Amino acid sequence: MPFDFLLDYLPATVVIRPAIGMYYIYFEGKIVLILRKVSKNSKHNGLWIATKQEDHAGLKADIPAITDFVLDEGETFESAWLQLSDTHDDFEEAAIRICELVSHRDKRIGKATPKAVQFTSGLNHE
Image (tube, rainbow, N blue to C red; front, top):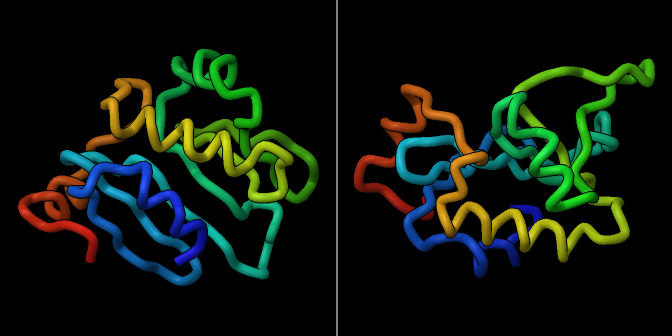
């Protein structure tokens, strides 16, 4: 799992589900993060933060290393997700701060989905 040092900053009750080159992090019925490290489209590697459009400005103000997604053509992709690139100079510090926000149940991070609820009902660190 990439960036496994972040587990030290996340609640012990998170559920981790691997996918191809990505690890989905669930907490209390919500998807909160995706950790990504693959060779294809490596500019999208790092942390993906599940959030809402209305919370983007506040999160980016609190953690300036966070960005919107940028597509291959240089076009910004508007979504509910924000990104912290693993190539950013402040990656480790910013990633730890994001995990601390998750641990403190910051309402700006996390999206409830049926899978998130299913994965967080009594399971942890799988």
